[in-house]
Length: 389
Ligand code: GLA
Image (cartoon, rainbow, N blue to C red; front, side):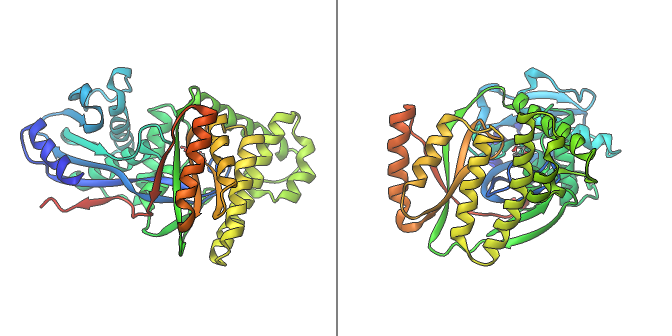
């Protein structure tokens, strides 16, 4: 990908790039819809992601080209026009990051040419947008010499996604991309941004991501609805107990105080946030104790809660998780990411991988008329500057 991006940059922009960069996508092992509720998440960066080649310009133009959207050609903008536009398509992500830099007083003295190419399957819920935001932040820091940590880059990415691109996401995806570490998951407390790396030793097992290849519409609005329900439930709970976030509650405390939530649906949403956070804490401990069967059981419980209480799954994903549960040698399986389609994540014994693929393909074809895609993923590092060669 790196060589291709470099060669294509020369073709499209007529000069060699100044820098080559990479930022990873992510998969979340457990801890879903907890990151805007002050809870824990447990994602890891992947070895797949987005590579970019960039060069500063001597005017104020911004020119962007994506190898994944060649049909759109070069999309042009300017540092004097940092506003989101529908026809700017994917370039609203890098533009949003530049806008967020400028908002923090880090003005770019000149524009830039940027060419990207990626191998994160489109719309799969493996965070290509967060990877693009982190990639942009990383290359701006390098090319223009700004003094920022990788956690700053994650926060800027999230800020731009919330305020420039209108998706009210939490910090998980950008944090996972910016702070990834090879063969480790990141146990992150989203209330404080304290984090710990948890080495993933899967001896004889693999993390398999299964792509349902469906993405239901209204993802953004349903996501924001869930956020609003949790915020309202929190306010109701705060009338009877002194908490800052839903992540402050144990299951027992939630059961004691839940009467304050005046709506059954909202109560189930808040229940998911509280229970999922506790599950994530237990899952990290299970991993430390090398108790993968328990880790897998918690994954199934997470899925059931996302399906029944939080209601962010969909029939296609449920078929995949249910089929996984019937294959001997599958330790756990659940939906991963924002929901309403996208991917499942499963832990599968090496010897069971073929049977896993066969069983899921068969059930998915029969019940949903589609063939899923499988990726045996590897856990990779955060963003990096690549040797330009
Ligand atoms: C999306 C958001 C994240 C997180 C997940 C659900 O991926 O971008 O911030 O809320 O959904 O866990």
